[in-house]
Length: 512
Image (cartoon, rainbow, N blue to C red; front, top):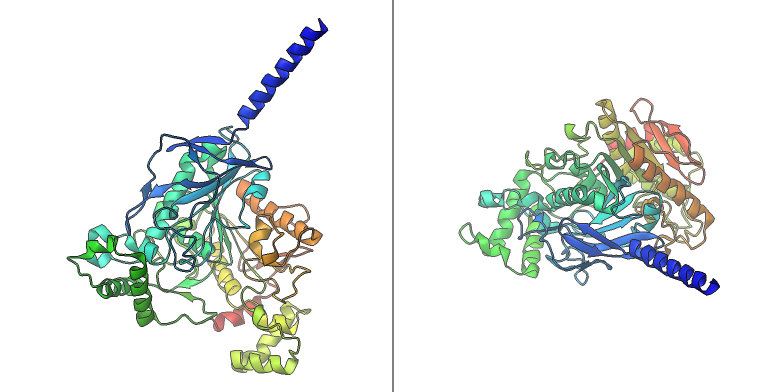
């Protein structure tokens, strides 16, 4: 009798174990077929999922379906680009998505966060740490990251050569629109809510978020937006982009009659021609300039209504809650880490930069940051926060959905290079992946763990509810030009009001 009971118990245990393993299989069914991923610390991950396809310079279309189960266990290639030639592959890396989720087809209606990578509009990839989505997915969101066409492949304006090519100048951004359509269509397969999607990105990714806020085809594909260090002014116009496109075609030896050959010409030949024409027409970009140009989105009045950050966004953004912010130093402090820096040296540098307004600058800086160092006085971000506040002023003055402004000031105790709170440091913190030697944040740093936990909580709560909140962080008041409410993210977080308005007003006069 005891043997029978024991045998039955073992059988039940084996069946239960088999069912549990079956339930945990990292397999999902999406519109184009079945995909198999992996499980990492209890989170399902699927990498390198095709979301679209396209001919060169043509708008992308949904990816083809497949019959066999598609292995999505590793990152695919990067989108085609010059600076990362060994990692990128045209056609195969251009339209890939990565997904992390705590459940598959479980009707959990998790909010979805779509990460749009940086690198301007010319380089970069979603296939890069520290944007692994495991830590974010553990906090109750579905994390998606995407690749899209870049540089000359995504933004070459051939509209002068006929209606077939009318959208070529913005196909890189239209790829992102199609990725968002794919996310919405497949949300439930990953336990996500198709009606609660937040887009976010840093640097060029933040620029892309701002651009999507001005694109009619993106309307309704996301409900909230986060812009991290992304405010730059794109000065490219249709006149400039069309001239650039025509010159590239001429440099390639093509004409209106032979333009179709551009579909098959080698990438290296195309790249060389585009670089030569870009230099001839636009010249070199001034380091530190607020302006972007070259192969990037162009406001054509159809796919893109206006350039973002001029100073705000189109009316399409009226009902979209926005978080926007910067790091304290961005790209500037690294030039001012000399231990021999003196007030005299600093005064000389400031006089060269601000002329007769240098004393006014020093006074405004000291009022905003009384404990700031000389290196900070010289190496504080002098344009991205300024443009971000201009965008926040514009957006908040129009009413509609709220704007939340942040400033990250946190510096790692292991900042041996004197980089300060630099451009991109917010990425590993927002993703709750702080430990990375490239960011001078070492394993086990309790301060890094604390700020990363709080920042990721803010990002996730904003995605969930539209109101960013976290334990250890004061209630975050929506921004207006009048109240100047800025959440300072540091070891001790605080909400401050117009603390640097004089400084920012002065810096705005010197924007280049």
